[in-house]
Image (cartoon, rainbow, N blue to C red):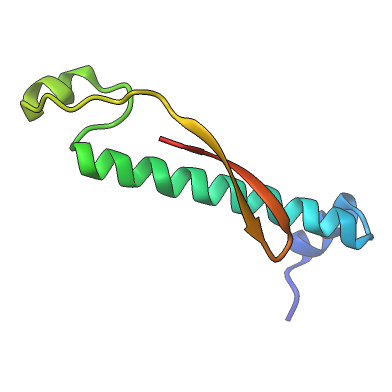
Length: 83
């Protein structure tokens, strides 16, 4: 059973395997970045820009930015931002 919205989206994105790989790599990048950010939020006990929660957490921890990293995947290299 095929979802018509998904089929329409696939047709709009292109037919070649290069287009499909780019799509999957983009999804991987977004998923990994989101997961790393959520993991950091859980570790520190507050969200990235939530100063009120940081003050109530009573921790001296802080975020010191992020650094770029390239992760190899089956669909090619994926550039991520590690917090």
